Length: 261
Length: 294
Image (cartoon, rainbow over all chains, first blue to last red; front, side, top):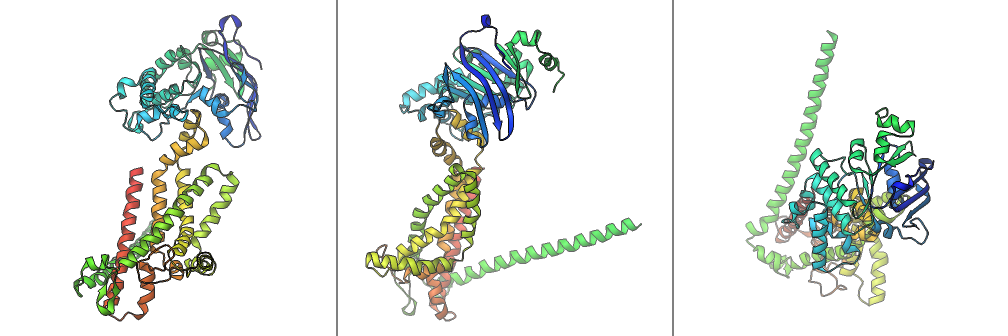
């Protein structure tokens, strides 16, 4: 089903997804999904558990390449360039499209080493530069003040919320253009969650954010656009206020008003 | 009524089971304690009864108990050399193969190789020694002009012997690294190799450390396989091609002719005790490394 954001409401499209299908072996997890993702906005993906939100998200930076048996078809473009084209290196795609996972996954290294991991593998070796990147990224992730005196301590000593912000800083350090977030606050307490939400509001100034969330309140609070998923299909997309106040599709309305899990 | 009686009967069975289990484990613990105690007593008689110095035992190269010389340095060095050789060659190679199976090999290959490698662990050491004696020693003899027996042959045989242990354990160590770390690294635009080298190997380092230490333990205690190819000359080896002796092979060579209470017998006991201490030290090391991980 073709769903599009009304033209007058959207800025430039950063990513375009046309007729995406994702299969796990014989099981089709995403059915003919098409979506335009506007630049410098927050796009929320909502829907009941198991509806394919995360599967859809992971196709956007080619994480399914790593899953044996998973297959993605259709056309997915970033700035007009097909990210699944034969001559495109998935490593480059992931450099430009960063990802924050459901559970914080800091490396068992120091806070500093976590943040500069990306820049280092992409060839930055100057310690002074790395320190600058580290500070800038941690500031952007609203974590700098809490950790500036213990950058050499293990990242695993941080609280869950701090770890998640560290993982966001780690993504910011490689200066991606799009940030994918897979329920980034679902493992966190309410205070840590509100910090992450504030942060997402800041991030859209420089980045395009696509976020999967199981919380409709969260989607309503932080996103500009919302896409509703059901059973592997993209049912409806619109501005977040439209989706939550005047959904066009009956199924969206049923979900919004709490008739599905 | 019958229920209560049945319950009473069940309790009696349980009591009996407990007695049997306690008895078995008690017997086991007592046997181990006696074994270690006996080895400790016999192993120190060289110093307590014969009044030889520990210093001479550890650092003198001259071993001729019938003339009063009990220096075991040649055997200690022999053991250390072959073990170091085995770890230097078999260690990195084994870790590399383990990493390959865990991270890079297709699932089907990896799951077919796993049991095959575990079978290798079960091959009796005399078979390894026999292959070394019939294949390796002639090969070294023909290419170098030496006798073929010596540290090189023993080192190569030991490298092969510890390989399955190191491969299997380091593969396990890599597999327990959570997928979230793999994904986290790849999602930052790292290649598979960068992910393995910079994230997974450090994360698995304590498990790999344990794999290497257990490889060392297997190497230092190995007897038959190296005795067959080492040449068994009780001298400090001059090079990779010269015959040598190890603690284990020396005990095997001389134990038949050691009279009860003789200096030779006490020396051999001291060597056995030394091996026990090394083994215990390695076990403690494994525990420390494993605890550091947790």
